[in-house]
Length: 218
Ligand code: PRP
Image (cartoon, rainbow, N blue to C red; front, side, top):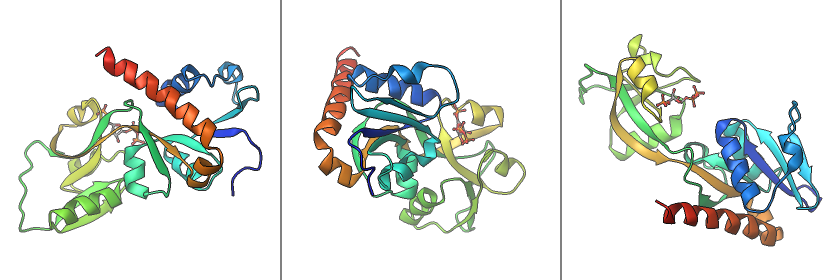
């Protein structure tokens, strides 16, 4: 069920990426002065512009959007690939750019005759990736600090997000192969996209314009 009011509900990913995302929405003409006041509030409105923003955990954005508690939001492609929420993907925002990669200890040699032990937070992406290669694996699902798994012998390799590569380097691991490139995406609830189409299109067009300008200045 969508929120009954006519405001556009926008789920922002809390954190550094979220600040960049908010700047894009505001530049698109949907500013919200209240959100810049310091404090611990999580929901902010600008009735004049018809928008209500709220900060949620980045990996939860697609849950809010899929269920219609948010009309639109910004989620990483990693989350979209892992959980396959039933939402529309409207734009690649070109921020939060990183990649999903297989990494291992520097001396790792793959023995294809053996089942590969893979530690990851992204079990579905990992299963699909190795299934596409016909490789048998043993998934070890972890919730964080994935990089430790090969060091302690819990797994042979990991599948995780690599951005700068610092975490791998500092733990003596290296990328074996890239699984998929990742970036932040503007997503929309399917029914909101129909019923709040004009404002969603306005937000999306305003952001697309900024992306086009950035592209021109490259
Ligand atoms: C991710 C990922 C790596 C790190 C990679 O963790 O799991 O640990 O970033 O970044 P780098 O290549 O720039 O070092 P994140 O900080 O997103 O949090 P998480 O531990 O909750 O996954």
